[in-house]
Image 1 (cartoon, rainbow, N blue to C red):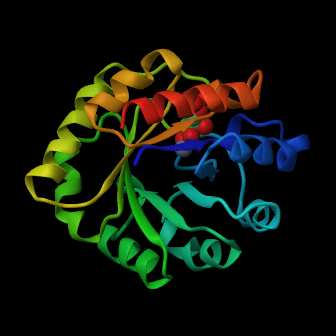
Image 2 (image 1 turned 90 degrees about the horizontal axis):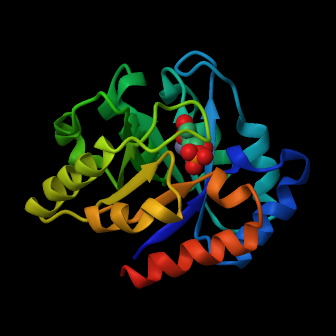
Length: 219
Ligand code: DX5
Ligand code: ZN
């Protein structure tokens, strides 16, 4: 199944609850929540309080993308606050296996993300612990950037690695996804699509409906 995961980094935070409800009603299946620590990436964003607070306004799956150093310390807390999927960065973990195991022990789905310069093969040792692989198609840390063309081939490679082993792992793509490159990204093998500015800037309902239509057509 192809899934849309709007990234609330691009939402109007003063009106967050309403904007979430609009995109959920129009067909978003996950809500992508970018957590930034100002160390792994230059900026800071949301923390546990925001997750806990928006959990009260929707039942949608919370797809929490941790762009933080040493994420193992925060996993239990994010689980308690309402996360359903936690994705950590391979580059940010001291012990990747222990971190992924911790996510699973909390009863959540585990994702592993790689930055544009990290070889796709680096995820292979962890496939047995993964529900999702997140291919970054921009440098993490900022919304509204341009999609890096090299990501398409990286998505293809990732899907091939999964298929060859007969595994059932989602491939998520994050950064610069818009209506114009969406079909190409899906055809390359991604099935969980993050989009921030192309959903929340402008008419949220219309943008979501258009994305969902393309996702369904590609199934
Ligand atoms: C970037 C974040 C993304 C970001 C995507 O580091 O991980 O989730 O919000 O935003 P757009 O779709 O605007 O590139
Ligand atoms: Zn993200």
